[in-house]
Image 1: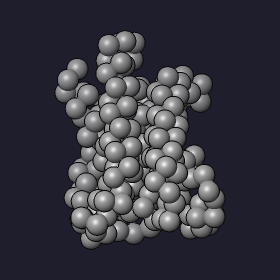
Image 2 (image 1 turned 45 degrees about the vertical axis):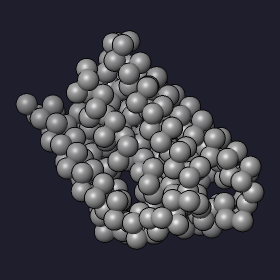
Image 3 (image 1 turned 120 degrees about the vertical axis):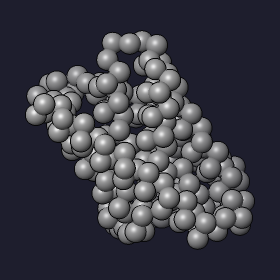
Image 4 (image 1 turned 180 degrees about the vertical axis):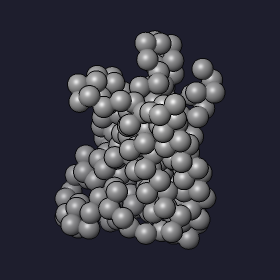
Length: 206
């Protein structure tokens, strides 16, 4: 059980990319009061956690209703995560989190907690795909599921901490430092994404 939770933590942490929230949050809340920044950070973390829990609770049922096997979803989810990994490694904007018009709209909105912070930057397609993949493997094990939710909560706390400390951290690590950390995380995510695809193919044909 410990191995499963550690693996999920690594994958989920890399997919959510708390480090990438530092320059994003600092840019979106530039010029705002410290009180407003804290309120946006707390709301975004809570809403993102709620979205993830809903997907964890209903993910397996959703796949069953749609007639999608877990192996097929592993292949699809692994492919999506691999594209995100390429985006992280090569620092390219592929639109897996949000499009340019969406980002432009977010800069004109005062309340950025739901969009674009909670969704799609924290609880984005990659994070939700990871939730569905792992929740399908948990099955009817209440203790493991509780640990699963605890890991999600832990990553949300890390995201909250990163957002609250964004102004100070940006002055320390800078944009270059954040990009270096994201690229290293992208390499790890690429390997894990390939493993998801391999497991999905194995489950489908062997």
